[in-house]
Image (cartoon, rainbow, N blue to C red):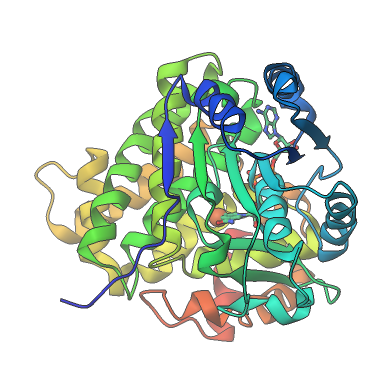
Length: 380
Ligand SMILES: NC(=O)c1ccc[n+]([C@@H]2O[C@H](COP(=O)([O-])OP(=O)(O)OC[C@H]3O[C@@H](n4cnc5c(N)ncnc54)[C@H](O)[C@@H]3O)[C@@H](O)[C@H]2O)c1
Ligand SMILES: [Fe+2]
């Protein structure tokens, strides 16, 4: 068997008590200056944190300036405030945007490397400051992953990937996702689903991650529509949150493929949110991959319950059709034209996508420039 290496948070709390555990752990951590990269959606919880820790002499500063997917410039601004606060513990509370900023702040606050130097795989030299994540979307799985993603000065999506970016602790509390509106629930849920799917149908797939990916696929396929229809359905929220954790556990060891590589330029060139970008391309990339991924896609169909009695090829096609229906049922019109992308943009999108070789190398089928163009055309 090929070897596989996992770097996960040393502490992971999942479930309804996760937020209370987080507060308790901060109280007893010995840390005195907590810098939170947060969002207005969790202001109430941050007030609870402040109230519960003030008698220990702990100061909490919440920064809510990250409102969407961060650039390195956004990151530098928040980093300067974290340095000014002299923080000894950085907390990311939010979606992937807030968590990714928090993760890199904890590493960079005492590090002398520039963002240019740390970009890429394994270039970050150290992290000395404690770092904690609480996801409020389900989600990127950033709380479990060694990745942090930013748009650079050239408008390209850049990954900083390092074991130092795995949080010390992650607290996954499905209740924190209850306020996420349906469109964001749909997009971020499809992102989590895509992490599982691309981790499973992957050139570097491994039995250790297959188990997580298939269970994530099952949970999200079964519950995402419910979570979109009724955000207060905490059972559906919890299942999607778990699926998102499993997807995040696949990101470090196997990572994603062509769906993500082709999705990034939609974000950088047209500001389409990350999850929605994936949703627009998922079924078309699967259709392209099908000849090289039939067996894997048939297994995906089986766990989604749409393969009964079907042979491998038929099951795989059923699976793709089921995923198309799921995306639609979650309220997403999965066409590039529906989000205002002009057809003339396709060659430029394909050119940027093909630069994302760090992910394309994982894809079950090789993607050349003309293939990327054809996939975007099909998704148009
Ligand atoms: N680090 C990783 O492993 C990893 C993996 C996948 C994606 N990403 C990155 O993460 C970013 C996207 O993260 P995302 O999809 O979570 O979106 P996001 O963090 O940008 O959040 C989407 C929207 O939801 C809002 N929101 C968040 N929590 C909410 C809540 N509880 N209630 C109501 N609204 C809420 C946010 O304010 C924002 O407007 C992208 O930059 C993407 O590239 C990172
Ligand atoms: Fe993603």
